[in-house]
Amino acid sequence: EDQVTQSPEALRLQEGESSSLNCSYTVSGLRGLFWYRQDPGKGPEFLFTLYSAGEEKEKERLKATLTKKESFLHITAPKPEDSATYLCAVQAGGYSTLTFGKGTMLLVSP
Amino acid sequence: GAVVSQHPSRVICKSGTSVKIECRSLDFQATTMFWYRQFPKQSLMLMATSNEGSKATYEQGVEKDKFLINHASLTLSTLTVTSAHPEDSSFYICSAVRTAAGYNEQFFGPGTRLTVL
Image: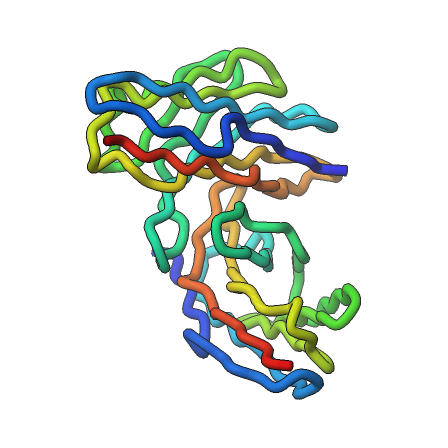
């Protein structure tokens, strides 16, 4: 059974204080690893897809990396508007369905 | 690109009535769409897979007669909550799958908050 574990569950940062969120996974035949951002009362917003170990993608203050066992979402010099829940999900085999982690709730204080 | 809309964004109804929620992919075609349910402070729970032109596939424990899904076109899927009861109150989110270069990516709608009185 595919499993996704995100840590920490919650993270509080000061504005400008860089950190990383972790997503470890167990899956048969990783097809893709996805990062989403979700604000309260809204649907998840697509951030990144990573397909193979060693791959990295960046978007503004965010950088996602992937190894064979885990992915990191690095947040550089975060701002209060980066506060949200960050969801990690994996896709296995030839299927479109995603297995989600429980998310990391990030709060950035000014 | 890859925009998914949902309508309505919020609905309040009386117990026993039916509610229809629409999910549209605005700038791409989606053979497959998904319907999720999310409870406060919890992650998304997959309810069903909606396939254009065929019957939906429901996850274990989800009543297919309660949650009717119709994927009428490559850009529209609907979820009808029949005879809604207060326990059906939740945040319902759809996603649409965009396929490119052999890879499938899911893009989510903004969600629909259903409150059953």
